[in-house]
View 1 (cartoon, rainbow, N blue to C red):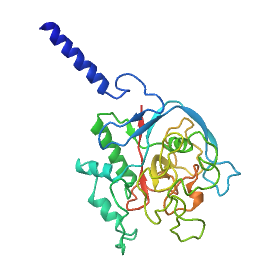
View 2 (cartoon, rainbow, N blue to C red):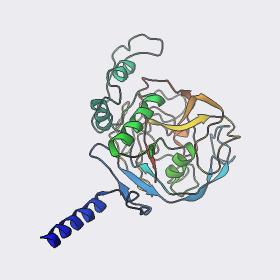
View 3 (tube, one colour):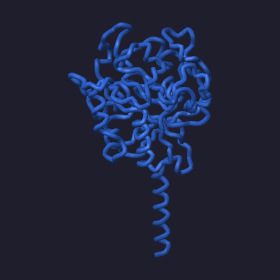
Amino acid sequence: MKKSCESALFLLGVIALIAQPASAAGRQPKPGTRIQECRNCPELVVLASGSFMMGSPASEPERDADEPQHRVSIARAFAIATKAVTWNQWEACVRDNWCEGEGIDIALRTNPDGTRIKDYKDHGRGNRPAVGMSWHDAQRFVGWLNWKTGNDDAYRLPSEAEWEYAARAGTTTAFPWGDAIDYDRGNFGMRGHGDRGPYTEGKDVFGDATAPVGSFPSNAWGLYDMHGNVFEWTQDCYEPDMAHSPVDGAASTEGDCSVRVFRNGTFTSNPYMQRSARRGAPYPATTRGRNYLGFRVAKTL
């Protein structure tokens, strides 16, 4: 009887160990490993440490002055969500009373001057990217993820450097597939300067609306929608010349921390705004109601 109980306890211990995330079991997950710790948690992919040139070379067409090129060496592997946070995931956070639902909906229907948007159009919920959240709202979501999964502040927003590292996926061109935009690879919006849009071409059939996440091919590292669909908040304070930008991939705490950097382009953006090096014109961290601004999460391993 004693031996039987000991065997049962040993088996339960083995099961418990298997059920833990790799990091909790004392093992660092390998690059390419997918992580999803709860039903409504975003799926993440582990990226290896590495070095890359952040920013754009002077020869890159339509580059901005706030994209100075400099080398960043990310010392440790980390995980980043394969897709932007969806409405399904956001609403799970709302149900747990961590995230705000009604306030976001009101903000989406309200102009910056406080007037109501006439003929407001909801792009759809479910598996489309959650939009309209401020940087502070995004922080509430990562707090919920840490509470939900029992992590100690491991979930967070990606740093600006981590975001670009993930978007480039080992490439040095303006886009991970080359130097010209490709409408089979993302929901890109306008064709060029002065275009009123919406513009559709190839697989980009969504026009003036967001696309469900993962509607286009992933990059070489398994990440979707790093170019197009919606802007995505990062952790960083905004500093135009990046003079104090960390070279280890950490988020910048220099510059104006009342505004935060966002990355990516959107379904309403010009092609040059979709480039890997493009830094979003900063918004106050309190900004809500932008139907083209969402976020994805990262995790410290």
